[in-house]
Amino acid sequence: MRPIRSVLYVPGSNAKLLDKAQRLPADALILDLEDAVAPEAKPLGRQQIHHLLQSPRKTSQQWMVRINDLRSALWQADLEAVLPGGPDALVIPKVESAAELERLSAAIDPSLPLWPMIESPKGVLRAHEIAAHPGVSCLVMGTSDLRRDLHLPSNKNRDGLRLALQQTILAARAEERRILDGVWLYLDDAVGFLRECQEGVELGFDGKTLIHPSQIEPANQTFRPPEEFLEKARRILSSWRNARENGGEICVVDGQLVERLHAMEAERMLQLWTNP
Image (cartoon, rainbow, N blue to C red; front, side, top):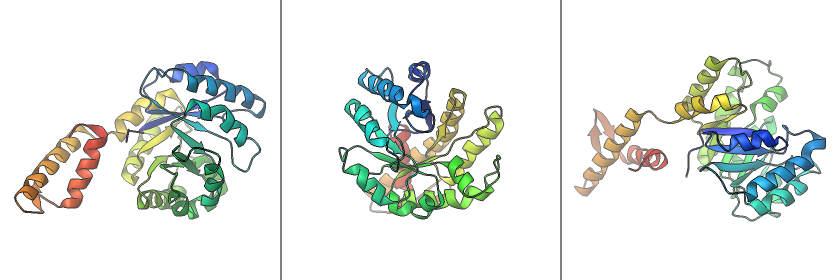
């Protein structure tokens, strides 16, 4: 498992941005064939993403591809173009049921991870069903579409989205899937973006989807646990293992009672971020 703190959307039809994005410190790129690409530019987008996926990678970035909506007449052509290059995952927009993913699964290698986007009321209400599909490894919040469908004001306030965000996080964790927060649209408000990243951490997201390179470093810093958290995780895991070796199941670290569940969470954190 690798970090997905910062996941940047990159339009497949923009060769300059595709080239630049490979040198950015984003944990992952979503090479986009959907909303960021005009209908007349989709053939070019497929061609350029196909070429990029066939090229040697310059960094350890993960490369996902967002195909077009499975209700459209475009997604099959997307698959034909991108599957030969072996993307790290497919991002599927506007998913509202597991049955849609079954249709897609029949057309791809079953080992290719699926990242369904939850961006409608039906998607939220069926998030657990979607997360339970065996091909799914991560859920992606599509908060802009969801805000529109819920008839919420187009502003920076997420109070009206909170129940949907939490319900989808619950669905992801119930099936041991990862989950990404939606995008921040206001590029002139870096303080607001940082605040929303911090809120994402508090809610339990693994990272954030991004629309601009300036958002990468703040997301990377916010979604990585502080070093003092990692150091405490080391102490928790070491102390609990020592207790186990001596026939115990609990111990105390910094005045906190530590049980197996705390040790397992510490181990997960250390496996993701350090060498325990």
